[in-house]
Every structure is written in C-alpha cells, then in structure tokens.
Length: 284
Image (cartoon, rainbow, N blue to C red):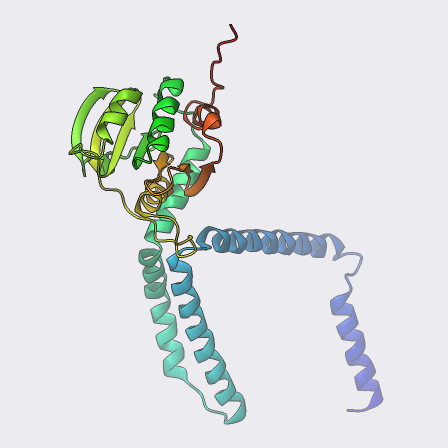
C-alpha cells in the first residue's frame, strides 16, 4: 500500500468516526439510544445479581456460566491457533438456546415468583385486615421471651398464604395474647409449628413453614428463624419469632430478619410492620 492509499484510508476512517453536519442529528439519536440501552441492561443485570445474592440459585448460575465461558474460550483458542471449525456445535448451540432459557426459568422459579410478588406489592394500596391489638400482642411476646418459650407467629397481609395455613390444624379463634401464650405452652399439643393470623383471627396453628434456602445465614439461627424467613420470602407476611434458646425476639419481613434488641420497643416495631400506626400510649 502506497502513501496516498494509506492517507485516503485514514481519511475515510476519520469521516466515519466524526459526524458530518448533515448526519449529526441521526448520530446523536443513535448515541442517545445506545446510552439508554446500556443503562437499562446494566440496571437489569445489577438487579438480577442483587436479587440472587445469597441464594442457592446464584451458585448454580455461576457454575453454568463458568462452564459455558470455559467451553467458548477453548473452542475460540482452537479456532485461532489450529484453524479448526465447529459448525455442528454452532448449530447445536442455536437450537439449545431456547431449551437453556426454559431450564433457567425452571431453575429460578422460586426467585422469579418472589420477584413478581414484589412487583405486585409495589402497586398495592396498603395493608388489609391487620390486627389492632398491638399492645396485647407485644405483652404476650414479652412474656414468652421472659420464659424462653419458643414461638412463631405469621401475620398474613395482602399476599395470601393459605397454602401455609393448610399444613396445620385449622382454627377460627379471636386473636389475643393470652391465646397465643396458651398455644405455645410447651405441653400444648399445638405448640410445635407456626400460628397463622389473618386479620383479627387465628386461622391455624401447628403449621409447617418452608425453610429458607439461603446459604449466607448465621449458624446461630434455628429452625424457627429459617422458617420465618422462608414464609416471608414468598409473600408480604410478617413473622414474629421468639427464640427458645435465648428468648430473643425477632421480626421477619420480606426475607429479612430484624432482631428486637429492646423488648420494651416491641410494641412500636409491631405497630410499624402490622398496621403502620404508632402505638397508643396512656399519658395519664
């Protein structure tokens, strides 16, 4: 290539890179669209990783991605170094892509379900049928805590949890702190398992809840705490746990566990999560 041809090629490259006056609006629109696409893809990728953080599905996804990337790198190296071609693998990959997407949907079905539940809760109008006996409930939980009596109570909100209710003994009793203490009395036949509360009624006791599949939890958390997390991951329910070992009270909401460090503040915490109202205090 002579000097004139090289100079002409550089000019063509510069012309392609720099927008001409007539092409400036079109190129500006393309750059803006590209920036929006990159921002959306980045947000989706970050949201997906944040949502899967600490879940068992993330480890599976990492293993699958590492395997696929390793195979692609090996095949690319063979193509560059040896000149081999793999047309059959390319065709098989194009046919297996839809199957791979279906496998991902099945693999992450619990996570996808939780994500859609969160989206549905974002457009909700507020809690429905939550109990009003906050002071009575907090008194009962404090009493259970002092006696180190294990307890697990799940308060249903907008997302139905009838599937959890069906695992226990059906009840239809007015909600009260005294009744909760009686149910969780160690010699009571209903003390093992969770109590389900809908509105101002106890609808079931001795319910078996699904345990969370998160692998990043502390080993100090027992079965009740893991069950509380499992019940609140798939719904907007609120779960209150009393530890049998330490008497510590914790509250689970949206898959997160919040220890109640001071039992005297339990009434305020319950009010904030159950009905969004501050507790009534007697000023007299």
